[in-house]
Amino acid sequence: MLNINNTSEGVRLNIRVQPRSSQNKICGETNGALKIKITAPPVEGEANQAIIKLLAQWLEIPRANISIAKGETSKNKLVDIIGVDAQWLENKINEFL
Image: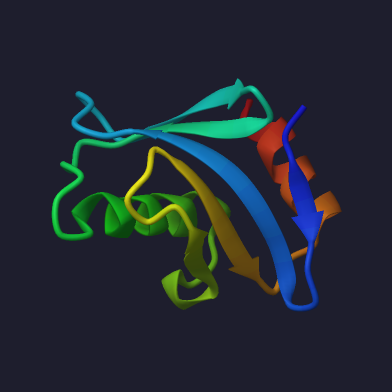
């Protein structure tokens, strides 16, 4: 089960990133985190920008509503998503997975 926490402005989500993958995609859940594969390398923030872009497209929300709260240089990250709640995000994830 994914670790999704409500915050005062939205939600905080754990993600696990695999950079330099063959394609950009959301793969499922691993150890309470959403697993994301991206083609971008983990250099100069490219991977983080690719994560934000992929999540924004997938959730159909503006990129400005998504930020990396913790783990900018790690494969394990905490992502803040503004303007949504945990139930909405869980439903969106369940539709996809």
